[in-house]
Structure formats: C-alpha cells, structure tokens
Image (tube, rainbow, N blue to C red; front, side, top):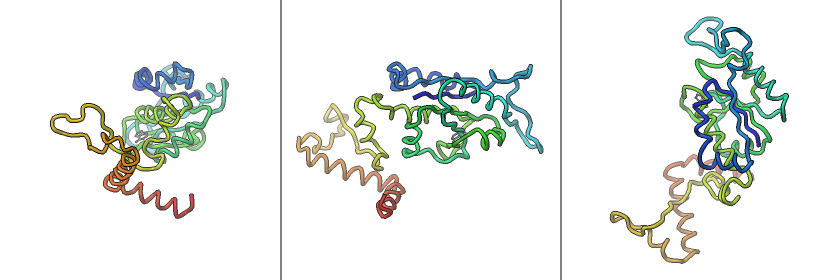
Length: 234
Ligand code: ADE
C-alpha cells in the first residue's frame, strides 16, 4: 500500500514514521509513505498557500490551487488513490472505516490548517472527510498520524501474526480484557489467581466476562451498537 500525505508541516509527521511498527512496515516493503508540501506546488513568487476569506471574517483560508496541483501531479505517477481530507468536520474514524481504508491500494491524505481549506477542495478533490474525534487540533497532521498507524498495522504481514489484529479491541467490538505479566505480586497488588491456574477454559471465560464488564462500564455505546447490528442480522 502507498500513502501520500500533503502537509505544510512535514516535520510534524516525519518522526512518527521512524520508529516501531510503522518503521518496520516500511522497511519490510509493506507500505510506502511519502510526505509532500503543498507549498512546493504553488506557482506565485511568494509561494502563498493561504489568503483571507471572501466575505470577510477572521483568519486565513488555504487556497485550492496547491492542493489540486499536488494531487494531480502525484496521480501522474501510479494509482489514482483515495483522497482523504482530515478535518474536525469529517465523519468519525472508527475501526470499520479503518478496515475499508486499509483495503485501498493508495491513500492521499490532505492535512488542513489555519481557519480551513477552500470549500472547492472538499467538494471536488476529497473523496472522504475524516475526523479523529470531537475536538479541534491545530491541523490535520496528528490526525494523519493516527490514521496511518491504524491502517498500516492492518496490512498483511505487519503484525507478528495476522491474528493479533483480529483479536484486538473493536474487531468484536468489545474492549480488551486486562493483561498481566511477571511478577505475580507487585507492591502488594496480585495478579488474579485464575490467570496462574493453568485452567485454559476458566481463563477464557474470565477474560470474556472482563471484556463485557469493562465495556458495560466504560463504553456502553459499543454494546448498544453491537446489539443493534445483531437485531439487524448483520
Ligand atoms: N483537524 C483539526 N482537528 C481535527 C480532528 N479532530 N480530526 C481530524 N482532523 C482535524
């Protein structure tokens, strides 16, 4: 899979790709990540990427030309790709959407900044508008890192075994059960004895109960969603 990211601040993102799973996925050739600066696709002497809003108002709006030029240039090489604009006004990113994006051959991510991006970019360039949550970041860059991480770890061969992605939270969708490792007692806090019992059936039941209980307490909305899905027969 190839992911191109358009951002005025590539340095906000570059570091996140240089360690851990994303780094390994690139080294193993599972994913190609490329950063591009829309400023390099301007045509005026001042390399301007923004301008005051028509109709007045505070702040600056990002001009459409550098985004269109950059995407069109990128598309001359390789697959057309799906264009995703990161914005707090987008649809909320969740695991089903991550899975759909992970199945694409190529993604082109646009990181907005300032007050916003000219509406024509939304209407005529972006295929999707995605938000990572109901809060406002200074720009789409942290959201792009989140999206890339979630998508890359689903690429075949990236995690230790393909099973590990399936087993984790939100495939089911329940929260994870609690994990413990050595030592069996730390500062007086003991590992639940059942996990040391060797009774695999009992451990599995306990973990399932923990998942349900945790989800009920912390994220009852997930249980409501899965109940709805099962009554819809999906
Ligand atoms: N840009 C600013 N805030 C954002 C958010 N919550 N999600 C995606 N992109 C954003």
